[in-house]
Image (cartoon, helix red, strand yellow):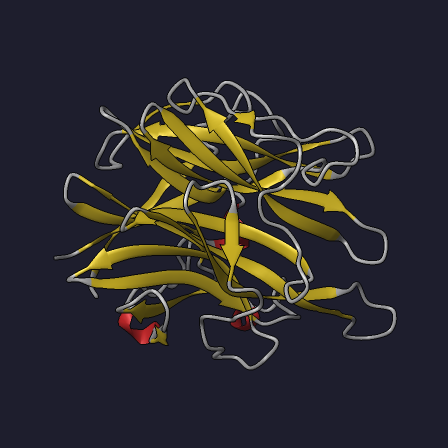
Length: 318
């Protein structure tokens, strides 16, 4: 594949939000509207004890992503209530237009004691064009099961052949690199289907994308698009440890393809979108989202520092 790199299309310093702490625009996810593209992302606030909490915001763009039209004036959905799966934030939220409604699939975060976090996938619905969302119930629509014991999240949903398909991640293990170190997680990409987008059937525990870095490779935020009659998946992957300080162990973009949505062949080199040395994505590329608008396929993604200051884009060359 060949891509036109569009650069950093959303810079939080140039387009500050009127809420939060003015940093992070993570996990960009596009909703194509009649006159614009609305991109949802997670930013951050601090709760009373000083810990981060992820909030969902959006930026509106022209349909070719050449200009920012505006930003949301507040979060589109608040964190969940006491004891809920999304009490401590939402990251990411992916969106799917369904008639006059927009389904938002949230990844809710809740803090733990022995490990840092647990996650689940929730459903929220918008009836005002994606300006605000209301939860479809208090609990998750997809969460831990026998063979996917924790860290279910990053759900991206498409309707193919009249059926809802969700690609998501699930945790396989928590380990400590040393006895006194913080526990680090490992997660893989899974798949589920649904007739209505609410009740889901998992392929419980099946890892659909082969590892490249070995069994402790962490795979995150898959996104799927079609090209020339074939399904393509872009995701990000990293080493389990050392990824925060060593760029060679940090997130980069991976790729797999499938002709039947069941068997996926990994071919990272086919993607052909390296980071720009010394640029905003020179050390890291992560959290991708593919979408089509006016016949063109775009890929949104975060760069260095996990999207601390914004996100960029590339356009697929036909």
